[in-house]
Structure formats: structure tokens, C-alpha cells
Length: 266
Length: 88
Image 1: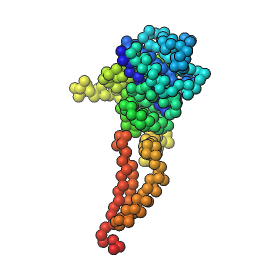
Image 2: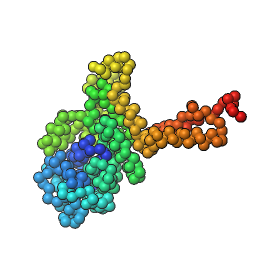
Image 3: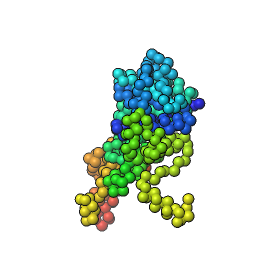
Image 4: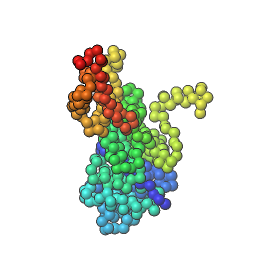
């Protein structure tokens, strides 16, 4: 195996990086892939609770890097999928406990063992972000359809460009189709126009994200959730599948289907 | 309701349009690290330098940053003074 390193980042905090990481990890694992998720938000550990694995932590990322344990000892196995692991962040240290070169070394050690390494980046553009960016083969930028997170996403995209990485791909999270329709929220195409990078996912605002996260069960496990389906589709796109975009607006989707029916399209 | 009336009378743009327009301007300046004031002073100096070589219509001179994807181009539109108005 030659694992691909995918870094999930955003600049602004609270836009859904950790939720995205947990869901992509689970979705890829459910597709039979070998996955390791790494929380690089040292000092503000969260991926463990979002994945529902907080009670299983013995060693963390900094322990593994500083050689207090073997890398495999810091990998917590998921309760649902044996082919999914989490390397949690250290809670009592800070971002400077590790360096970008440590992350490159750690990921190179993991690559032969797994298909995917999904890195949850901390907010900001400082050391923590640098640690998360350094080993990335691919960068996914999460944004919300709202002025401050779009502005921060643009900054991040510029920094990824400057680092000579492949162009970042965009995930627009928490879009509310009703508000978009009323002209009170930037649409996905507005955000794509502004940021001018390829889109890999549009995730609708969905109460079930919070509800399932409360239980430590990422929403992708809920087959009835539109957000869950959207995250699942991102995982399939990462695997190279050409997945059609889900229509978020029910009325529009009905009209579109009718229109296609009459025009004889598929 | 207010926004509906506003739109009915063509008073204002929707909040999404306003967000998009504002973001567009902010991103141009973030990416280039050029503030609107910088752009204004660049324009003044440009007019000054070019005027040393050729007579230009300073009032109609425009300078702007054109955005194409993530590429940005500085566009200066500097009309020359028409011959009949030339001082010399």
C-alpha cells in the first residue's frame, strides 16, 4: 500500500474540519479502505470525542513522535471498523511540541501500512497548520457560505499554493438551501466563483450532524441524513469515483427530474 | 418583509449579493496585499511618470485589478489627450 495523505483545513475555526475528518475516515473505512485519522490540534484535542473513541486513549501523537511509545501503540482502533484508526492529539502540550518534519516522517512511516491518512488541522495559519500541511498529498479546504470563513479559506488556499502543493479542493459545509433561495446565503456557485478552486463536496446544514455527534457516531453512519450522504460522496470522489451532485433543494430536484423526463434526458 | 419591500422598489441587493460583492473586493486586496489607498497612490504616481513622456487625460485614467480564477492582473487604462486639446 502507498497511503495518500489528505489534510483537512480551513483557516477559521468552527467550520467543520473535525466533523469532516471523522466522517471521511468512517466513510472510507466503510468502503473497505485502511484509514488512519490524525488529530494535529495539540492542546485542543477533539477528534477523539467526535469519533466516539475518547475512552480508549493511552498514547497520543506527541508520545509517538517523542518515542515514548511505538507508532502502533498510539493508533486507537475504531469500535465499528477494524480498518480505521485514530492517532489522538496530546492534550497537555502545545503546537510547538512537534515540527512539520516530524509529521512528514510519521506519515512516511504510516504510508506503506494504509490506504489513507486523514489529517485534522487546527484552525489558524501558524505552526499547527504547518504541521498538518507538511505531509499532505492533497488538501481539502472546508468553508461555510459566510464572509469570514470564505475570506480565511482564500488565505489558506494561497498558502497551500505558495507551498507548491497540488491545488486545494473545496468543501462547502452547512449550506442552507432555503436561505440560498431567499438570497440570504451565498450559494455554492458564489463561493466557487470567489475561491476559484475545484469543488469536492457540498454538505447541507443538518441537525442530525449534532445529534449523531452527541452519541459519538459520525453522521455518515446515518443513512437517512443528507449531510451523511454528502460526506459519503466526498469519500467516493476522493477514491476517484465520478459521483453526481445531490440536489439539496427538494422542489428544485423534483422539477429537474420532471424536466428531464419531458426532455427525454436521463 | 423589509427586504421584500426593498427589492420591490429596487432599493437594495439581497444580502447574499452584498456578501459576494464585498468578499470579491476584500479577496482582491488580501491576495495582492494592496489596499485601496495603495492603489490610489499607485495611480497618482503612474499618471505623474507617464505625463513626463506623453500628455494623458488624467481625469479618465483608471487602474484596477482584474480577477480571472486565482490569477490577478493589474489593468491600467490611460487615455492619451486628444491632439486638438494638446497644449503643445
